[in-house]
Length: 233
Length: 233
DNA sequence: CTCATGACCAGATTTCTTATCCGGTCACGA
DNA sequence: TCGTGACCGGATAAGAAATCTGGTCATGAG
Image 1 (cartoon, each protein chain N blue to C red):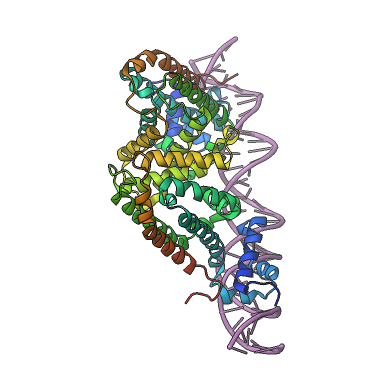
Image 2: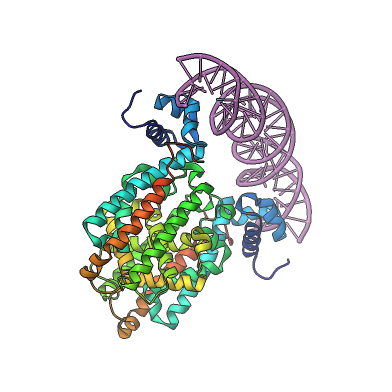
């Protein structure tokens, strides 16, 4: 049996590769199977159907990114702050062509995959994460307390959305590379949401385990939805 | 001859009404002419072609909005500040169904009209306006001076884009009405771009004529591109 | 003479029909 | 037990025919 990692992963590799080369719409299950060196039916031993397969590709990328976030957070608790997180996520997304296509609504590559109903629960998990995170940060006055959590979530969503979409839209007027844009995004989030003044390192460090646990839960919840070992029951 | 205002305006009225009811794609020139109570060929005495007609509808709305901005700015020079402007524009756009459809990329109603190449020069005028505006504000330290003008323009675009698009995208999680969202947008822009501390009223008032002139130029430039009196040469 | 008009044309769009493809299943065989 | 590819039907694409509509312009009203 060729390849080092297990079959489910190889299917995901093949699917990811083909989507980037041909676009979601044009990739057939048979072609994915061929590229993975297996029979067509075998794909269905791992994924219930077509969209679950491709969604898994996206989720696997997200899991990788979340893993990176965890590492960074372990190294420095400053990464629990919204601005730093937004910056890191932005750079991580831009580094991954599939996520970049998803976040910048590249309809050419991902088609209507991003609108798939199966995406809904993932969004929910993410929104819950942010709700919880803001709650904790607020309790320790790391973010402003003069806005509601809903307002902060709204600002966070809007600003992030804007930075992902505005780059392409500005066209030739966009003179910023990814690093510079990420820094701008961080600045905007920081000024809009963080409590004034520098954060208290002691508080940050005290909170680190709790936030780490929350992010780990999120990471695991995501990972649990990547099939590829066995089709979900 | 029925109707009070002149024929070009009546054509624009008819077009605006039909676009909102049927969507840009479905509206035919003949139908617009019928609704305006004139013959089909007459439309072409006012507009060179289909897209110029519908673009003019959009531009006319923008001229109205810019007029409101001018009034507000005359009443209170605080309105020259980016946050206040963004807030006012947001509310103005949300109040006008056609502009709302354009800014929130409602593809159902406006189709690919927003992508029309004829839109380009308008964007350019608007971007130039913002460049000039930030330049003036910066010279009088009403906005931060530790960022480049390009960076500030980028932040402004991104944040605005985000707030226009994030509302629909948040779906049921969006608990804010237009007023609250506009306030949130203003807050975000203010914190990200304004100089710290309250603005100096004296400086604001001293600058009022200059900014008023800039906005008036913009207003006139926009108005000049609304045809409807005679097809452009 | 000026200006509005609607019949007219070509190209674009839609509709209807036929052909091909592909997601998903499952009987078979390794 | 597990992997496979032939097979099925619905979906999608391709093609042909019919309809529609943006834009023009000869005509006639004022």
